[in-house]
Image (cartoon, rainbow, N blue to C red):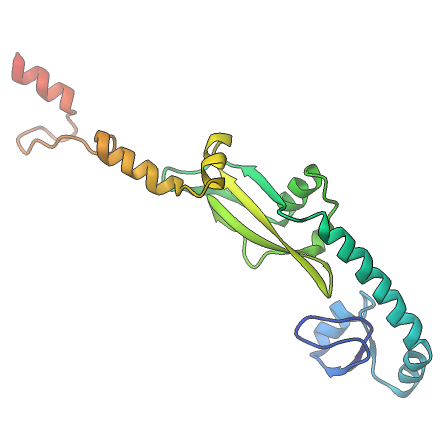
Length: 197
């Protein structure tokens, strides 16, 4: 289906461009969200008659978005989640969680503005794109950690998971003494008691 774009759409075109898109994309997204019109003679005449107004409204929205983008300078949010010893989250951090965290940090963001390719499923620091306008986007650092202390360490650039495994290796915290003659399931303390007794 051919459509006339009423605003810039990423990977499609700019205002006024006539582009060919799949019917479902046009019917389910572009047309209901007023991002495009069907490309027929009547709509072309309506678009050309209103082109100046549409472009000025877009410029105003872009200007507001650019002002708002300045408030996002060095924006960072921390999300505390439970995770396994290897840093895998129990669940994931989704768009809803990011919107909530940004709103708590004082940035009013719509759910549709967050561009998250896939849910965040492990601890770490991630860059998430927030599209404030089709032509204006900002990047927000999202720090996902198991505790505020871990979040502070990650913010300073420390790889928390590597450090946990280093500590485990130094103290022997992740290994258990192995005795080839022990009964299956017997712990090291039981074997020591038997050896002394």
